[in-house]
Image (cartoon, rainbow, N blue to C red):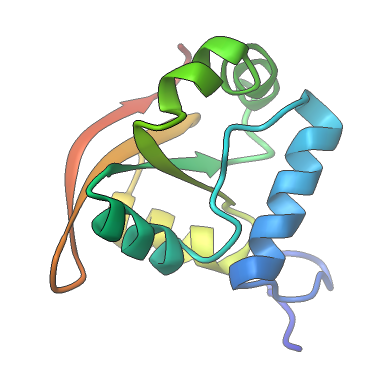
Length: 137
């Protein structure tokens, strides 16, 4: 197991391990999380393709001043759960973990946080950004 250089000795978590840690941390801090895919971003994209659904991606920045309010008041709300359930495949990742960090810097490039992106996942492992919402909501 490697170590993530930005995590002060935290083990490098990827795929299911990172997803499980993120979901557990979310639940402990904010309440019931949306139905995050318990796997890698690529697992979520494959699932969105196979189910013909849009992929909703939440990039979580634990250091941003708006994160706590957004997670507890918006993402943990029943209204959001009802909206995404059955309509989207949902993936969330903490940008202090490698996979979400790479996704943030090389693909989605948000200007601020919180950051939610909606992607259309096409055959051939191609994803198109449909919309994004960033900043204080």
